[in-house]
Length: 285
Length: 249
Image 1 (cartoon, rainbow over the protein chains, first blue to last red):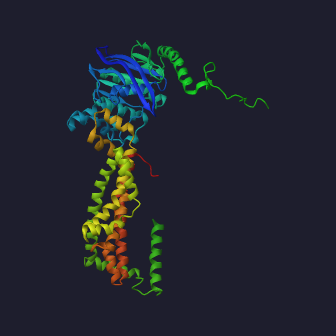
Image 2 (image 1 turned 90 degrees about the vertical axis):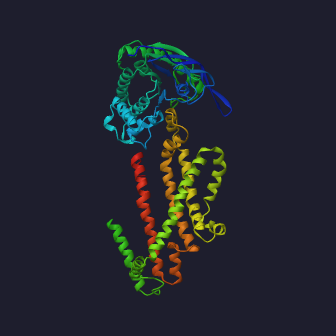
Image 3 (image 1 turned 120 degrees about the horizontal axis):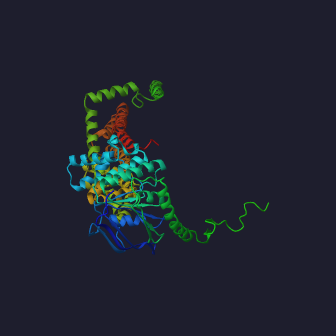
């Protein structure tokens, strides 16, 4: 387990507003987060809490409305290969083979074809997919696609990995395997990882720290330090207990979001959608 | 395969029987045998070969230019909002005009020569390619672009390495459509005005009242169309299907 080093990512008073049909929608409000080198930080929040927006900002794919983003001591001005993102859908290119996908970004790094091939093969080995070197993307399962995407990101040798719900679309068994693999990769490469998820258990299982975001606009609500030793397993009772605490804090947030969405149709007491008035399930017969 | 073969055999037999029945004069309605003899003679004395060569040269130049220019045009329309609203609507509108209708203007502009026929062929294919490229670019998953930009790919490289390959299946559809438009336009053009070429051989056949030549040339035109489709487009589409993992719909 990498020891926490110097400050890697500093987000200072980050606010992001989108203009939509004249109305202004606030996705993030005054978010301040600091991540040390080698940390594995999980961001958790209800849907619509601006988690993806936050990663886009750090990746430099969007610009913040207010605030500052500093990565490795330098302010972020645009995309850079020191910060590589992994998406929920693998976003692999179907016209390239597996190895072609892993190599894709390496040309921008100015490597020779041989160096590109060797480096891609190395990271493909790291995710245990050497056998599928020349396979086509559509021949892979969901979990394999996501591992290729991880290899593609690692091959860029970024300092920061930004992971946007990367395992959300996978089945539970595949997800378990990838949790183990992710912990190994993190231990091996000592990358700083910012991992966004709505799965509290997953966050508790993977992160050295879990940061809870509020629903729209996203603000930092609470921080949980996860000091259990790695490797961790999602079924571990300690993890379950920690997840329970986070869940409790999250629940009131989810309720707030649902009330905002459904208005009076959402009943906090009953924790369900209210039936329309006069709806009797046929009791009046 | 057997059914198909049987069907065509029956067709030829009916044709032979009809020509034998003597309803029409033999020069009006040639027998299969006469057509085969004319075809053979035409190929041997080289007159058909010259026709094929001239037409193929025209279609290859005209079509090649329209694929390049059409793709470029499609990229521009697909990427620049202003061009999409202006040039895009013009192209959609012009698509309604069969390209052979450009021939009178083309003859005035370029004279009765290769320039005029090339112009008509290009107008036949370029719009279909441009429209398909535009549609292909618009349907590229934004996720691909985000992923590529994230890895530092931008500008021309972003188009060359991500947007064009992602739009390729759509571009091929446009190329296939463009080919058939161009081929039809070329035949019509050769038939109406411009010398040599397969279309011209049809005119010669009519002038000589030799319908066996007309039918023989028609067979050549059909064959070239089918062979191109099988050799070029079927292969391209097949390649795309295996790469992208799309099942045949």
